[in-house]
Image (cartoon, rainbow, N blue to C red):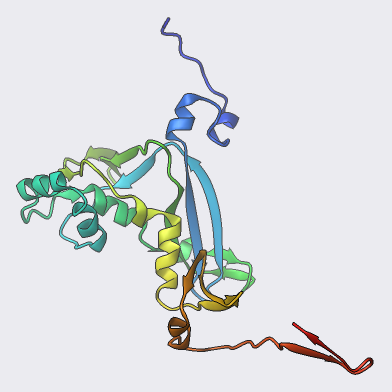
Length: 237
């Protein structure tokens, strides 16, 4: 190693992540959903990233994701028992991720043009992780800028972080599925006398009792015998 640094062209930073070893390791994809609060139309964009910037969040706000993540490691529980306490100035990495993926109402000065309403509307924005990199890098925002004083100050708040981290709750697939879990439709279909349940991207085999117990909304019956008037022939289907 001669210590020479090589500059990478900007175009290489937004590629598939295969341009160099650094991007093959650290490159991921973020998903941004902006939903019109009037009609529900959602605009989705994807952006490559090599790190994720997180705001420090106080730990006094409860989080279901934090509970589930901490339970995955006994080491995490031990660290939490030593450091958590009741100090509202303490933040957790899980809390920061919860805040990052939480729906955010954009202000009236940030209205976006809704393709369905054909006017600018107020909206909700939600971030999620479309593709995880091999190594996730989280950048903690420890400096905040005051536009009045025109100066920055360091945030010295303590941050708890687990030694292992379940990223499933922050993936786009999990977040979209949780939205649908609030109320959506599933389909049961029969193929070669076997019933299947189609639930978004998940298809599972089910028995007759499961199908009979389902809350029917629309039913489709396929005619077994087709009749043709012209020839008066009967064809089995």
